[in-house]
Amino acid sequence: MKRQGFTLIELIIVIAIIALLAAATFVAVDPAKRIGNANDAQRWEDITAIADAYYTYVVDNNGSYVTTTDDGTTYWIGTQVAATSGGATCPATSTAISDFVNLDGLITGGYIGQIPDDPLGADNHSTDYYFYKDSAGAVIIGACEKYSGASSYPTVIR
Image 1 (cartoon, rainbow, N blue to C red):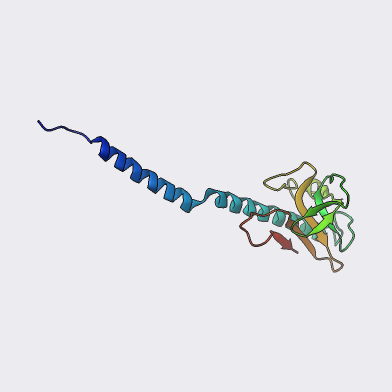
Image 2: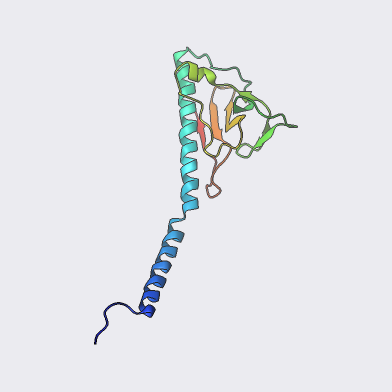
């Protein structure tokens, strides 16, 4: 009499092969890298939206800025920064930032829906984005965080 079905050894071998293929696929896909790259893409989108809204405001208001800032000073974008000695350091700028710039005029003017926050949102005071304007009027808006595998911090210059 001939038996139908698989032997235990055959089933174990098939399961082992499937497990090896699944492990190889998981390593090849590298989900941590994909999440990190997605966070950096969100950072690029956020700072580009802020920079575009800022300069649209400037153009629409005949060169008037939405906020008063000192040229050559780096500011946090947000509502307040926790008081620390010398300010908090932004790894992207390697400078201590102790003041903030309030860009709420972009929201009330309809230039942007809301000031975006970093995808990892480390605190409730700052967006983890920074703002810098030089004496010629060029504005740099950048992210203070990046995916560890990325070569540079997301930055937009307008």
